[in-house]
Length: 248
Image (tube, rainbow, N blue to C red; front, side, top):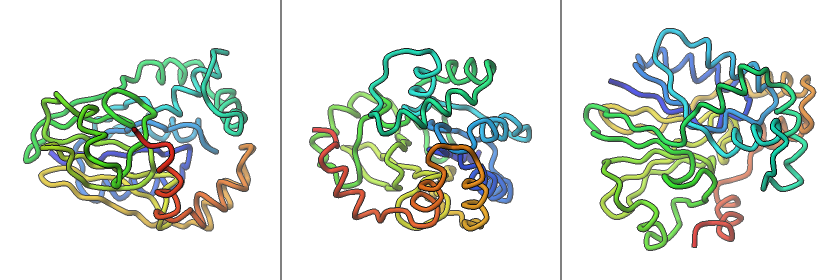
């Protein structure tokens, strides 16, 4: 069985379409969507695209972005910084009731048995939390308690939009990266599992995607097109900025 893990799509439909085309060429048998389908410039279109995948099984887990959009839609208290509240509110207004019910049904983690790998746990940020931050540089001693007691061979996560493959104790932990908003090289990052572990990068027509995104009513459409598609921040720059927020 070959499993594709797609994380942090963030409403970037052109990136998702390019990755779905590639996973079909790769003969993928199972698709895991690892959270943060939302927020983003094409939220409904992106959800409908994923729901329209009918040629292979698709399973979802919920990310902190999906959770925050649901909180906004419900009028609940949220910890989202004010700078991001507008896009959360906009994304929440786009959803239909069936989308809301769907997002609310997604679990926080998922476990699969993958031949050649064994037990694999999928989570958004860490197994215990959908918003904790760690990177390939976070000291192992900080992470050992977070990943202790997991009866799996591999954990797959996302959240920080940067791919990595590292060890935490005896456990292998892989970040699938971001389909819609990767840091580093422009394009779409994802993960292919079975029988090995393969970090993937899919190029697509960034100029055309940026033009489509600028044509939406997304509140930060111009910034998304310029900074998240065409000229994303470098990995080194992001690692430096996240060092202050990572797990202690």
